[in-house]
Amino acid sequence: MAVTIGRRNLLIGAGGLAAFGGVAFAGLNLWRGGFEELAAAPVFATDGVAIRGIDPVAYFTEARPVAGDPAHAHAWRGAVWHFASAENRDRFAAEPDRYAPQYGGFCAWAVAARGKLYSTQPDNWSIVDGRLYLNFNDDIQARWETDIPGFIMAGDRRWPEILAGRG
Image (cartoon, rainbow, N blue to C red; front, side):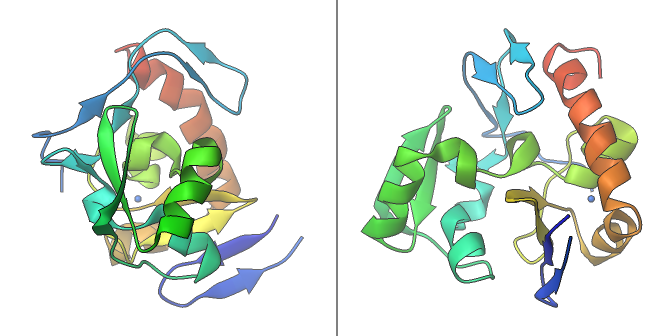
């Protein structure tokens, strides 16, 4: 399992309640676990802007959160995503599922451990096996890091339940 963890930018080989104002919803999804979801998929957005305006591609290319620029915006899944450059916007537009954070950009730990949607902070992130996961704060990020594979398994199991309103 390959893991890049925010703040400390480590590479290792082999998760307050969300304010739901502006949470965007969209249509049909196919999640990597093979679940075809008929329910709407929420995206963590404030005033319609996804993941606090942070460029999701930059986590992969610069190994850090980078503020996006509204001049390089792209609409996807009912939210507006900001990017630091036109190149990053175009990368995202070509493969949004590759760059978009898992669980709609909500706190990965909260989805996994609680089955709830909590907000996230840009500095609390990790990339695991090529997937971006965001978390609520430093304490939750530390909890997440105690069992990343277990939390991903639990989150992948719970996400379809959350989308179906059973979470």
